[in-house]
Length: 432
Image (cartoon, rainbow, N blue to C red; front, side):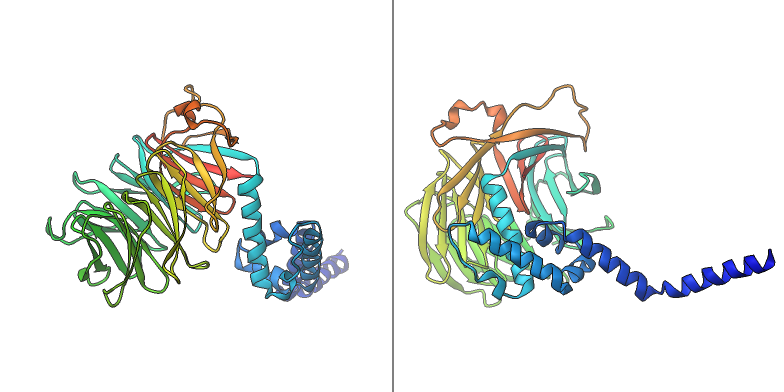
């Protein structure tokens, strides 16, 4: 018995020594490679963005590269463009392009599933998305941070006093909000600081954009005011328009893009404070929303008259103007690094997907059903229904307003568009 026991212990010890961390790591690598080999190249591209470990396994596996590129060639052989330059590009660029291509195909042709998340007790005004999280704010005096994977609320941030929440943004460590004529900073641990300390330090703010360490506030007097988050001081006042600044956008190369209720867009230097250019179009109505695509150097805007417009920042020329709605366009956005599709929403409640290059409306989407009145009416509950694409000859006015509530704000993620409305729900449109 003693000999048998000793032998078992020795075998276990020998087995433990054999399974060194390097061996276990190698086994995990092989298992992941085996699993990944069952995926198509679009899924593989998505997996490479999940975590550093998966990205390393995919990027360093020669077999997976060969497999993936062979599938890519097969796909190109059956496509109309026939281009085969994909495999000659760096592997990381190749994977990113595949993921973006999948996103494009899903938005253009995929089936639509809409998850309705009860986010607030009153209408949800705005939303921002980063790092798998969604920040929403409304008139119920609280901002909520949601996990887009579980739809669970992971943080609540109360709005001070009796002043309205105008605009907000966030990063890994903090939330920055424009509240009345003040800027608030909430740490993710819910601690809050407020500046300036006195009401009326700057004119009424209408919009705000934040890029650490600076927040830029568009004001009613036509100025853009730049605040340093750490010194808590206004570092610059930039005259951008003769009328109220209604929307802002910041570029990666230190440019401030601003739109006005009087129409027109100006481009100013964030560091110099000087106006670089002024963009104009045939649409003289007010600009309601802006976004900038750094990859294609295109600026997109939505107007009070229902137009979506596009300029090339390199030539300062208007490329296209498309009447997408009978009335105001409140919001438009695209996924970062995607130069194909622009999502547009406004007062008529139709989610429209446009070709970024031409302005052509690719698809118009509405809800395919109604919310159940018997569901629990509490924060955080969800309902699911289908979305549908309208045919080109379908009059928007023939669609019941309950199937197309006005879209106040939207943000775009991989194969999804998230919209907020005047009602209490956040809607996550998933394109399958």
